[in-house]
Amino acid sequence: MRITKILLSTTFLLGALFFIGKTSILAQLEEGPIYGATEGGDDFDKTMKELEKKKQEYEKKIKDLQQEENSLQKQIDTATTQIYLTQTEINIKQQEIAETEKEIRELGEDISDLKNRIAKLKKTIAIQQDYLSERMRARYKTGENSYVIMVFGSDKFNSLLQKTKFLKVMEYQDKKLIAEMDATKAAYNDQKDIAEDKKKEAETLQDQLERQQNELAAARAELDRQKADKETLLRETQNDEQKYQSLLAQVESEMAALNMAINLPEGGEEVKKGDIIGLMGNTGCSSGPHVHFGFIKNSKAVDPLPYLNDGHLKWPVSDWQITQGFGANYWFYMNNFGIPGHDALDIVSRGQWSGAPIKAARDGKLRYAQDARVYCPWLNNSIGKGAIIDHGDGEKTIYWHLQ
Image 1 (cartoon, helix red, strand yellow):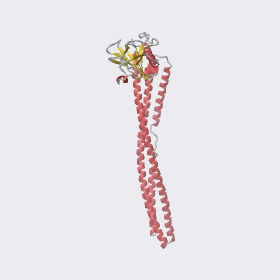
Image 2 (tube, helix red, strand yellow):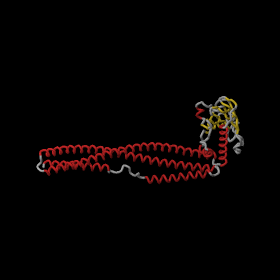
Image 3 (tube, one colour):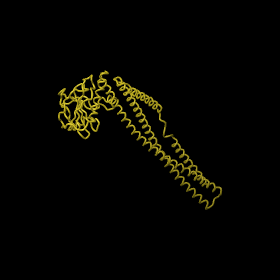
Image 4 (cartoon, rainbow, N blue to C red):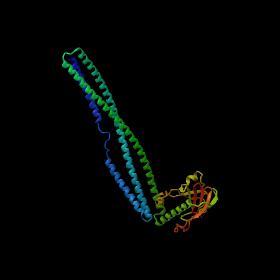
């Protein structure tokens, strides 16, 4: 009878512990899904749709303007619409950055929650292992007592059957506890895998955020340049159609000189670096004496300034001053000719207004050239004159508006 009470007490105690442990595990596993719905997602989608719609409207307007006859008003309208388009693109990028930052914050919260879950599951596994060890020891002791009874006899055969039944119940509950512990371990490993995936996702989003921020900075710089180009266009034309057409013709003349230099035939007069090759003038599409100095590398116009500064090229004018830099008025050039701004340097001599000596920037073969027609009859009604030097290795220099 005493052994029966011990068995009953042990079974009840361990069963209670098993129930408590199981309830705790289930509570931890059923706390809620790791992946929750993103709050404010509808607002983000709505804003993005509105911005994309505006972007498409501006793009259509620019396309329609391109079909119109070239005029100052068209240029101003196109530049204004491009500014609106770029500002809309900036707004889109700002929305994307805000959404990415939100996702990163939410991922951080998820990762923190996962760490807590993993810690709880790890603790639960340890508790379950302790429960199982206690039950195994109890089963061993109970089995030992039952063996003694079977060897030396029992008062009642029914008592032995009852003890055997308790052992089977304990064995069944032990199996359930082992299965529960295996499930907890599996959940632990799953949560660890999810945590690793979340960490990788956070790193990917961080890279995406940096890329979006760089794109935003570039778009803002482009917006500033577009605004400056529009202001330059208005300043140079003074909102006058004839002055705009003069500017347009001037660039056509520059493009003609560039094409002439790129397709320059072989041969010419040998010159040395620093030799005087002409005098500064005001021929062609020029509003005042200056030299249009261009540098070509492998059939492409490049900025001469770095090559002048490092001594690769010699300054073509003494006491020089740059009046228009390479790449200036980007929007006007790109919109009309598909090139990224002014393709040369405009240089004057501070010491001599007209007739200043123009010097060869490097050794090479010199050829003189001139415009095929008068591009700006309303400006000075003259053909542009200039010189081109082939320096070899795909390098050429242009000197335009000479006397």
